[in-house]
Length: 335
Image 1 (cartoon, one colour):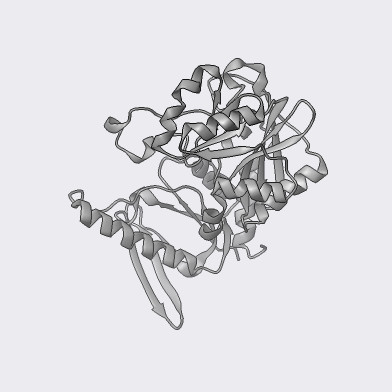
Image 2: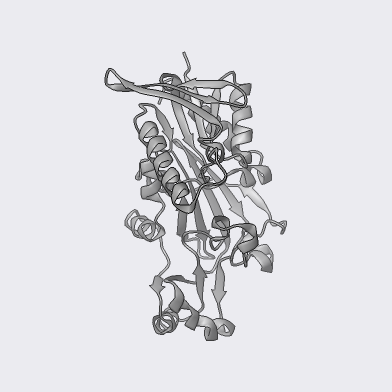
């Protein structure tokens, strides 16, 4: 008998919306835990009895209930800030409530013996981009020379050493923290990967404010978005060089560049799969460059990266089905 699939996310998550619909269409049940409604909209009745946690979560607006024993698979899709019943908590009260809620939730989730996509411990270990570069190089990927600095002098030396332009990119969030502050406090909504050409050199003194990440600029023939779901690998070829606006960062989705499905060389496909699995992840979204010489260059892996924008452009890459099937198989105890 198939147990329930728990999906941990927030209310504004179209990926979860669509996968939940697909799971239902395949005749299976899921339970959605929106963190931005938790714990305010959920009733918890959990007890440690006989050496294990037992009890239920109930979504109060609908009465939908989930027993811990029914959970066969968990998809940790998206983070969101908790919501509390009182809207008038003092800053210290809210800090305490947030810490206590996180401790309770993660303590219960980590106690589950089930299939994960992916376990929070694995996701956290996999998110550090600096470590990713070293791991990717060790596993055989080409990786651009890179620099972290908070003074301009090393940046100038690095640019001179690589003999050409360099790029600047954020590591934690391309939104520059905008998602962490109220709308009225936002001064910008983000920054794309930026090529540091001569015109930007006079601005490098600003790196004194925060450690910054730079890489040697790598010439591109095209880019790849490689999504690993379980043992399956889905690769999309992104023709980012077709338009000046996407040459450095393809994520300008207002530009209609071409995407197409592509079959990776067997060695590269296996390397991508192995890289994701080396963290204990069941999911990963890798960004690669293919150079004019045909070299495959690793940029980064996002353990919770989006896939829907790729499938919308390449419907043949049926990743929604792949995610739903993985979770259903996990809930059946087949993984």
